[in-house]
Image (tube, rainbow over all chains, first blue to last red; front, side, top):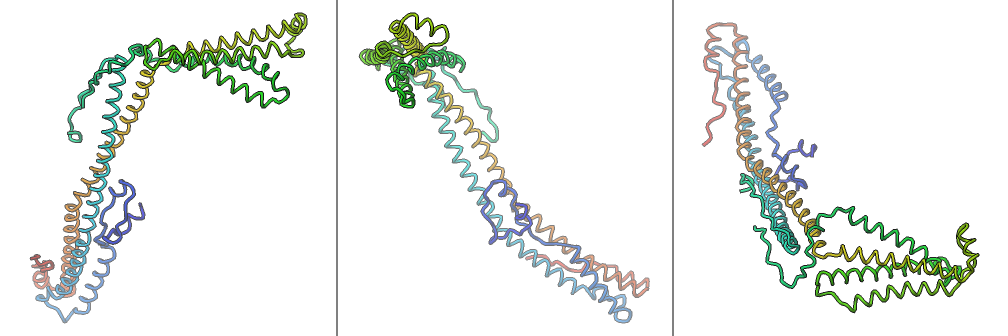
Length: 148
Length: 266
């Protein structure tokens, strides 16, 4: 599971999670922003360009001389992030679907267990009655959020 | 769900209503069976000498026969005890002929083995001064005494088994113990599956909240990239101002360092 955490979960690489814990921890990892790499290269590029412009190619009105390049770089990275975000949405949908499936399975198992418990309780009551033992009334279960 | 039991069937034998038997400890039953087993052990020892008379040197055949005959004797005594318990409880399954048949077969086993011991004499035998006393008593009296001892053991162990079974045979108590065991298992299974269902719901809640988290992550990533762009724009302006070394130019260059990097999405 640790290896899986470090891998990007995309719609294609989404595995079948054998345990509920794995499904609980699954997230669409992404938005690979690493400022240590990107900032160093961008800073160097800006310094190179300004050094090339100085001293004669700029004056007090040249504030925005590098802005189009910076804006283009920013737009490119924003587009990458937007695309990645769109890729994450189906992954999340599938994770939600898997979680709903697990809930349905767990509910069915619980319903079956409740049924077996009801049968066992009735059998126990009948066995007690045959022996002339007094009937047992159930203790009232407090109503909670989980047990409405 | 109600736990009020259905009305008991009138034909159920009232004699099985022994609620005090329900809470018997395991030791109570074991103690009774232990006495029976000790008596059976003595019975086994006596029966072995009888069967060795019949099978001679074939020890393993004698051992098989001992076990088989002992099992048959115990089984017959047990079934006689069951019939006695049924008779005591007023059970419609009680059969007088069945009881008499198993008692007769049990007696036949004992009497047959006794007859073998009486009419097929053993050469020598006995331990220590008992051997000497047996020799003094003469071969026939010795065989009769050994046979009588065997018969007494057979009767004692058989009657012990019958009495034990007569006292402890109660299908209602057995059914209740079984129902308690099944109920305990069902309670544990219900608790386990309920916990699993709660856990699955919490996982679903986690994943259902994921779109909102994803939106936050997305916004954060975008803001981070835009902030990085602003930093680069500021850096460019500062580098130009540093290179020009002119105060009015520095003021003009750094007046509005926020270029349009992320136009509003439409």
